[in-house]
Image (tube, rainbow, N blue to C red; front, side, top):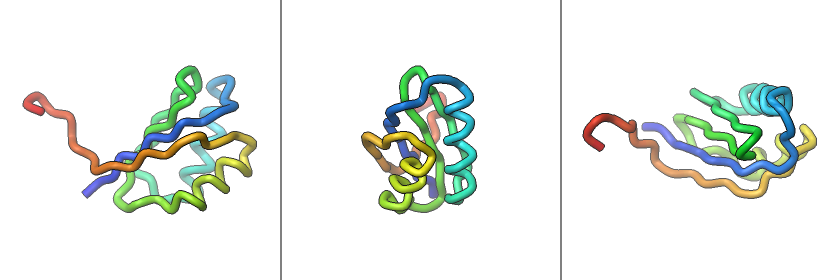
Length: 82
């Protein structure tokens, strides 16, 4: 069972911003995969558990960025026949 979490972030300007925020998320949460696009201002996470949204907001805020939105949904592996 996996959750796919999509975050909209304000304030990421470059790939260093993206890697900084990825490190903070990995340190604070049990995440299987993190994919960040500073151009889109988006982070995609894969987790085996539902993420505490308040804690997530705080972690991102403490790194100097603004979390605009969180979307958590069941992760479906995108295969050939989906």
